[in-house]
Length: 194
Image 1 (cartoon, rainbow, N blue to C red):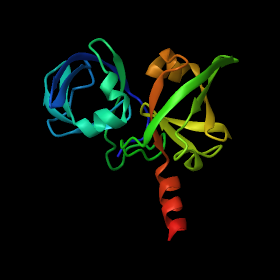
Image 2 (spheres, rainbow, N blue to C red; image 1 turned 135 degrees about the vertical axis):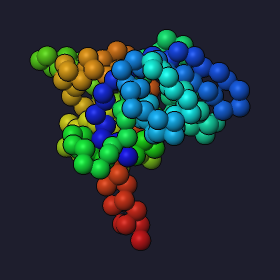
Image 3 (cartoon, rainbow, N blue to C red; image 1 turned 120 degrees about the vertical axis):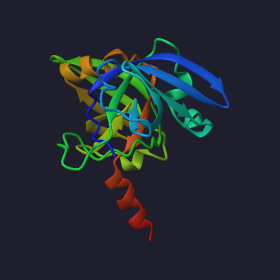
Image 4 (tube, rainbow, N blue to C red; image 1 turned 180 degrees about the vertical axis):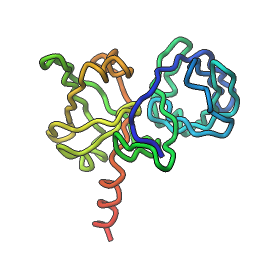
């Protein structure tokens, strides 16, 4: 379980494509206290640490994850958002995030609004009913508040701090991001089916 509050940006150090991918992520300062077996949200995807040293950690990525997320586009030198798993008693600054990506959203518009940026995304049609104005959404691991919804499009406002501290600051129109809908919305929808 995560909160969607990004604490570091890591850099892909190596990608070994054999069956599952073995990916090493450089993250000096982040790895202190991380143990083998720990769950790390890597651009919103919960991955298990299989090896680590003082400056990097390694994860194994399955074919299913590669197929359903942006991780299949990872290359050496790419930057990704990082967050450690939530511990009981930690501050919950964002919202409950599982690290189980529901699909990909595509950035269709980016406009300055004051010092912030308004980013508009197109969600997969099957996921758009779960996205509500003033509700929460997770994009590349970052917990965000939805400002408006129009059909399968939704907009978020990104403040300068978040633009600088996450990879959302460098996303361009046409880029895909990992989308996780709010857990509460998912379970409410399931209850309504019963």
